[in-house]
Image (cartoon, rainbow, N blue to C red):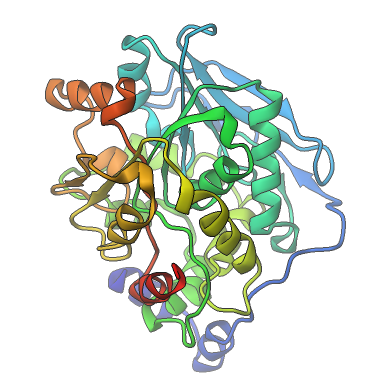
Length: 361
C-alpha cells in the first residue's frame, strides 16, 4: 500500500490531498439510476485461463441492470458452490478454483458484482450503496434459482454474501469465508492507512493492476493476468463502482448499513448452526485476526478446522495453490461433509474487531 500511496500522492497538491482525505461517508442514494454502462465484449477476448461461457440475469431492483455470472458443472447437481469476489476484482479471480470444484461434481456459480467484470456498471459513484449491492445479489440468487448453496466469499464478497445468506438462510447449507468481514461501525476515527486508501488511492490510481501486484503473495502476475484484471475497466467512466467501494465500508456510526449488519449478526449469525469455516491469509494485514470473533460467535463454527493459509496475501484465491492435489482434497472434503465444514466472517480492521467483540452482548 505504501508504494501505491507514493505513486498517487506525487501527482497531487496538498490541498487536493486534504480534500480527498476528508471525505464524508456516502448515504444511501434516493435518486434513480439514470445511466448504465456496459464494458465492450471485446475487452474480454482471449483472457488467460478464463474459457467460461457468459450467463446473465436482469435484476428487478433499482432499474434494469444486467448481472453476469459463470455457471459451470452439472446444472442439476445436488449442491451449488457460490463464489463471490470483492474489490476491485471479478469472477476471473476464481479461474483456478472453478475447474477443481466442477471436477468434484458441483455446480459452480461465480457472479460479477454490479459495477465489476462483465456486469453492468451504473455510471455514477452516487448510484452505488451497500444495500443496493445486497438487493442486487439477493435478487440474483432468487432469479438464478440457487439452493443448497455453499458460499465462499472474500473481501466485499463477504460483506455482501453474508448479508444475502442472512436474508435468504433457507437457501444456504454452509459458508466459508476468507479475508472479509461484517463491519458494524463504532470506529471513532478511521485508521490513517484505510483513510488514505478510501480517500486517495482508490480514487486516483489509474488502473487496478498495481493493487493486485501488491496484494498477491508467492507469485508474480503475468502481463496477461494484469490485462485480465483491468479488462472490465478500459476507461475511467467504467470505474465508478470500484472507486466508491472503500468509502462504503461501514466503519463509523455515520456510515449506512451499520444497523443492518448488526441485525444480521444478532438475528442470524449468533444462532447460525450451519457449518461455518474461516480461511484467512497469514500475510493480509487488513484482516489479520478478524477470524477469531466469528469463530467465537457463530455456533456452526465450533469444532471446525479453521485454517490460516500460509504465504497468501489479500487475494488468497490466487496466492494459495488451489490447483494442487492436497488442497483439492482438503477443500472438497470440507465442502462435501456438513459435519466437518464451516463458514467464517471476519472484520476489515482491528478497530472493527474491538467494536464487534463488545457488540456480542
